[in-house]
Amino acid sequence: MSSPITEHYNTAAALKKILEDGSDVSDLSEDEVPESQVHDPSDASPSSSEDDSDNEPLATFRGVKTEFWKKTDTFLPSVATFSELHNDADEARADWKPLDYVQQYLNADTFQLLSNCTNVNSVALSGRSLNTTPSEIQRFFGASILMSSLGYPHIKMFWQNSLRIPIIAKTISRDRFFRIRNSLKVVVDVDISDSMKKADRLWKVRPLLEIIRQGCLLQRRPQDVCIDEQMIPFTGACSLRQYVPNKPNPVGLKNFVLASPEGLVLDFVIYQGETTFKPTPPHLKLGLGGAVIVHLCESVSPGTNVYCDRYFTSINLIDFMLGKQIYVTGTLMRNRIPAAIAKVVDDKVLMKQGRGSCDVLVRQDKKVAFVKWFDNKPINMASSVHAKIPEDICRRWSKKEKKYVEVKRPSIVRAYNAKMGGVDLCDRMISFYRMKARTKKWTVRTILHFVDLALVNSWLLYKEDKMKQKTPAKDILQFLAFRIEVAQFYLAVVDDEIFDDSSAGDSDDGQPPAKRRVTSIPAKAQRTSCARHMPEMDDIKNAMRCRNSGCSGKTKVKCQSCKVYLCLRAERNCFEQFHKD
Image: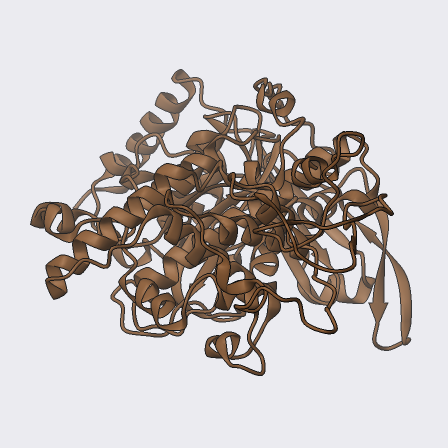
């Protein structure tokens, strides 16, 4: 048992050692929390709270800095300059058509892969090949895209006599469509070793995921990006299935997405358990949310601002990303920042001050700011680049007054609201015309989801390019029209053999009916593809009106494929013009 004199000399020696090391002991003021009562924010992380132990050796905590927060409205962080890499693709896309944008994600090699793997697996399972071709796979996806755009409640209705859609029913039969969909594969199962299957639980769809991801990685990285969860809806049996409440589709595969504020997906990773992300240093205690941010930010440049929600944000994550010159802003859970919560104004005080009131704390090293803002309820936010100033005024609905009221809004809230909704925008676009697949196979559901994602990305990029080119709004295809045009092109793709469309022509005797109906103009993709449009002279009594735009002449020349009458004369070759324009 030590005596009081011994304890006195030990304390004096410790104080002398602190002064010799140059430690600053003047930072503790009367209104600050003593060092012994301040907790490291990392200790409050839910993912690591169960692993904490009071018996850890002192060496474990060596070098840990105690955080002190001071109330101030001034926050001037040192931010690295964002240097955007020059992308030559913007100039190359000047004359692109809608299909060219989609081919960044789904090219000819993708359909060849789907065809080969589907045939090989059908032989392994049933002993017979499905004998599908890349062209037929394109027609299958064309039919799927068009079905989702038209919105019949049941897929079989597209082949019913009273409701059939000719462009679908004549291109692919109902039984063939379902057989291809149920057999769709992107890998040959027997070629995957047991070790590869164990290492990657997504091996059944991995090739397609990498193809789509490479298309996403080609896109330009803006200075502001957001990261959030995206659900791939699936309620069948699957070991990868997750449940995320408060989502439009809470059950399915969880996909973490990096996106621009406009909704353009830049990178993604599907969660498959502990092996999804590279392990981070244990002492950082970043948790799963932090590991997601670190993984997806590998493709962004220094100086990028990342916005995320409370699932991902922690002070340890903000500090770690500061070392990479990437600046994180997001909402924050109270238990992840106890030192700041102890000093910030209480919820009841902010409530009395009214909507728009806020309190700001800046860490002692002036690298991180904590803002508590009261709107309908208190909101905690942390950032390494935003704080309170400059404030602005926003309009908010008041239930009590039954009208919009003006509320002061800090800079961090304005930036978060403007930049955080990219992933939600992409989800909403996909949900408008999601390809239906009532199937027990999670692989089919995943394949169709990422085809939908590729279409959304293609349209957003198409729209951005058209706006840069100052194209009139009426000439820019809306998302529905964009999907239909891509679907029509896929449906018009034919195999190498000669196209036979004799069944869609006139009667067998070659005589025209007494009253001829006006033939509808075929889709542009159909009339401009391949070389199957041959003219023929129709033996009719009265010449028909030429269907080329701007021509009022009459002719007996008809296209064998399009079944429309077109002028074919030396002075006016409407036949050639119709099939080129």
